Structure formats: structure tokens, C-alpha cells
Length: 271
Image: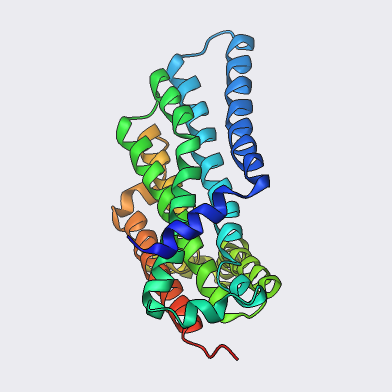
């Protein structure tokens, strides 16, 4: 096993403020579960499946949102911090190659992301007991949430390798996150607004715009899975399985890009 992986894990475990993350991560799904239960008591007629669907959607998308926020924050300083603390020279002069160093840092970030993902798993399983969504929806959304968390961890690690300061890496990771989560959907909406109605009625044009601006969004495949599993009518369900496959493909390419940036950053001169 990569020795840098265990070193990175020990550093994360010894963080004094680490207990805040699981507490914050667990309180939000717990709050949503309580709200769903209270809503069930105040409604005259409600099916258990409706409660299960509500709880499941809150748990799935709360997990996705927190992974999207916490994963890059936990990885954006892993390489630049070595330069700031004057420990990068020791890493660069070790027997490990830059690729092995990047893999060790990356595995540490991924393990941290998987640990965060496991914290809300009991809430998702509890929602499954109520019904409402098929089991494959829970499993698929959980896997997609983990994958997008790993993708953002890898991108943040790559940006950490490019920049010499942790603050610069944090700002760059935040800019990428804003561009991906907010700017692209806004540009897509503007594109729909600028095109004439006759053009936007074309199926091919709609698919190109949606694929270019929306379907690779960090929560787009999860939304598609939940909509299909809950039976909500939507035209995007009829477009086939390429809709979530496109998002997953883009995420995998971003993983490769982040890893390449991390290796490139570790190959830079110490001075």
C-alpha cells in the first residue's frame, strides 16, 4: 500500500475539527426525516410510499450537496500545503515517483469522501423501508453521489498541484465549482431563451443544449434516476440511458484531468 496514503489518513484523523463534519452531515438528513414525519401526521390521507419518497429524496440530495461542498474543500490544499510547510522537498527527493505521490494523495482524499458518503447511508436505507422508490434507485444514486464526490476531490487535488498557495487552490476550486454548478445551467437557460421557439422545438437541438449545459451537472444523473424511479412524467426519461451515461462519462474524464494536473504539479521544481 502507498505509504503516503496512510500518512495522509493519519493527518486527516488527527484534525481536531473533524468531528464537526460528521455532526453537520448527520443533523441535516435527521432534520429532513423529522420534517417528513411531521408532515405525515398533519396530512389526512398519505401513503407510506409518499413518506419514503420524500425522505429518500432529502437524504439522497442532501448527501450529494454535502459531498459537492466538502470533497473539494478537503483536497484543495493537500499538495500546496506541502510547499507552504516546507515538506515538499522531502517528498520530491523520496524514492516515490510523482505518479505514486499523486496516487497516495488521491487515495487519501477518496477515502475521506467515502467516509463522508457512508454517514448518510443509514438514512437512505431507512427511507427504503417506507417504499416509494425501487431499490436500484437508492443504489444508483448513492453510487453517483460517491462518484461526483471523488471527481471533485480529484479536481481539487489537481488544482492544489498547480498553485503554490492553499488560498489560491481554494479559490480556484470554488471557481470551478461555481462554474459547473451554477454558470453552466445559467448559460443553458440563456441559450434556450435566445433561440427562437421553432429552433428549440427540434429534438436534436434540445439534446445538444441539455447535454452541453445540464446533463453533466453534479446532480443531473441523480435527478434523472429519481424521476424514473418515482414515475414522474418527464420527456427526458424517454431519451434513454445515455442521459446519465453522459454525465458519468464527463465525470470520469474530469477525474483523469485532475489526476494529470496533480502529477504535473508534483513534477515541478522545488525552487
